[in-house]
Image 1 (cartoon, rainbow, N blue to C red):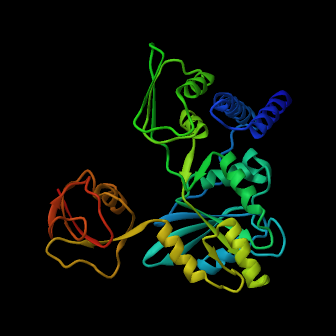
Image 2: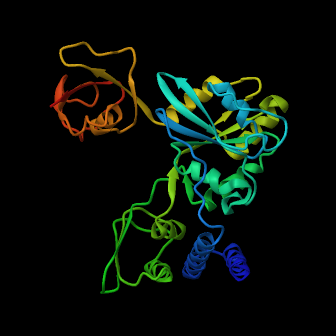
Image 3: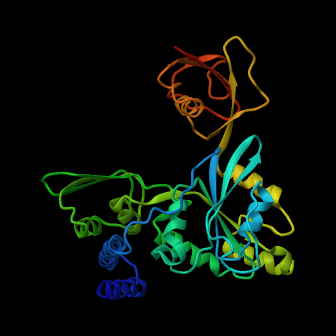
Length: 362
């Protein structure tokens, strides 16, 4: 293991100290590919299997509160949900996952308070493996930063990245289909700004891919190419919230907020701006309201069904009852997604906010 650690450190130094340009891009690509392979090897060989915390997803969406110890996550959870998480002015108050439900605009959003992250968490230190296993299944990550420690922000970003989670990024549109022979064939529908074919070939061969059809539809970096080859990354939206703003002068708080590009400034202890936070969570989850209607009856316009944006009628049926998809006959839709009121539509139709849906079953 020590040999691997030394090699990892050596490769990290090579990457950090190399000037990236057209002449060096292949060499840096090789360093990064070798580094990714080594880290994967160390990860698989270290510590055995860890199942992570046992958390049952419930509600209309799941948000995980992430931050260093004593950042105020428990206080925030208590301020916006029905949870009663223990709070204290010392580190490691939360030793397990504490769930709470945020009831907002008819949506019931599950908020999870996980143990505070420490440096090295992505490698398993301080229950980091369990914490990041919860993050991988989240619909939204709320990164909570203490106004007194803005340096925690970049440290958290590093830990999140090292754990294989890519925040606020779309999964690159890259298809790699391994073949039995004929070498590597690369097709592109876009111009790549930082990668040439020689680097792509070198990286693929480092991962022992010698025969494959590669189709690239988005401009990618060498890191994104490696992510696509490994195929084990999770893409999750995130918001950055600056806490304890009541404890510093306003001008200093605003400077720190700009420095970390915070989405919102709050004081969880004083409950300042918590209503704005609820609205931010709701909007960032991309939730929409679907009003259900029974045949020959008026629609229930008081309590909507909460779904994710771009959901299909199939998704709605699955959420309502496990037998609705198999028994589905047809549906009628009124609203923005329908060409005309009461349009007859199938399971694959995508719904829009405030649509009215009537489902007919066999």
